[in-house]
Length: 502
Image 1 (tube, one colour):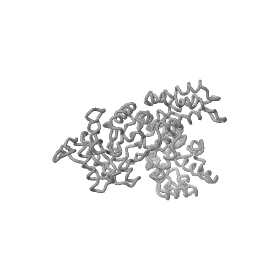
Image 2 (cartoon, one colour; image 1 turned 120 degrees about the vertical axis):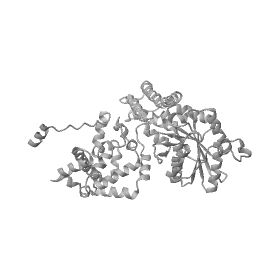
Image 3 (tube, rainbow, N blue to C red; image 1 turned 90 degrees about the vertical axis):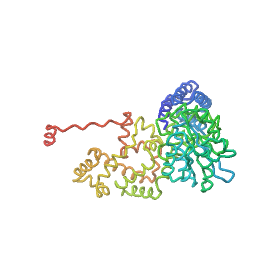
Image 4 (cartoon, rainbow, N blue to C red; image 1 turned 180 degrees about the vertical axis):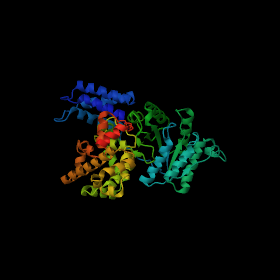
């Protein structure tokens, strides 16, 4: 998320390092690079210009604190302006005042992730707010849109109301005689929600490849006749300036209530997130951070600013951990680790907990200082599989008593484990070595009576080499990416003779 923007800003901030104090000259030179980073990330020109002007005005008037590096002061000013640009926090739903269900209308271009986001929002309402939503399939234009919503509804246990296209004109009278098919589906969906006791209705409307008169007329018809309490605009963050332009067009004609940014886990430059709020004046309500239906989170400007500047997002990391790891499991694991009874069974459970929390790249990016440490390391999503394979190839005694792998029979055991996991003996040795080093490191922290040292400046970086896979991660960071696998050479007769002589 925001990798390109974050890296560019980090590079720009280096221009302030080593300066004795902030001056108009070095501020202007440094902010020129910040402006370039924003424009390369698809931030609109007007937004970037206004942002730089505010940062410059604040920086020039900022008193240089004794003992504080000027680059850190600039980062603080940029951080505050980013929060102001994307804020404030506003994830409220406007509730129905008439006693009926609250209606949420989802609008956006085709392909922006509108239908998937409707499913994510319904799941979030069920799990976080204990509401009873109903999904309404009002996209009668895109093939298979209705079926897609039905599949999503089945996965999350939320009912879906739908009608076959072309059946809505029968028996129309009064106000809805001239209504579009989509409007009638939405109207009938709301009636169905009232009859079945659903308290939130999410309308999945149609999109187009671009804004056109037919699309806007249909959406305006739905809004004017049904008067939904909330109109959420879904924007694809990967489309850059197109997302900003379409957001402005939708807001001008529909006066949306808020914005949901999708696909922020992809290879996005992130400029849309900074521009949309400034261009529309409407708050960003939620962000989508993955394909799975639980990958939606309330938008926090401060946390987003932290991630953009490579400062992590500890608040969100703790929230994710609380959502996926029970307090009892965490305490049990910590107790065994601190008491020295931690073994490979415990470690495997810990890996599975981490996997529940989401993609490793996303989790690592929330740890302060890790984004800069990782550099250009690419994550495929399968980083933990070799470690899991090695542990799963151990027998029960070996997992519960790691010392067996260091004894007289340790060599043959390691060869068997390597063969069973499809890895090399060196990989098994590295895992065992780092596992023992991690236990020693934790016992040292425990003897100090405080594990908070891990969260001190540089604490993660100091501890990382002791963690399983940590040394490899640091080597990859310095080399700019993972080292390609070396092809195995076929053993010749000379190799076999040489091995026998040894």
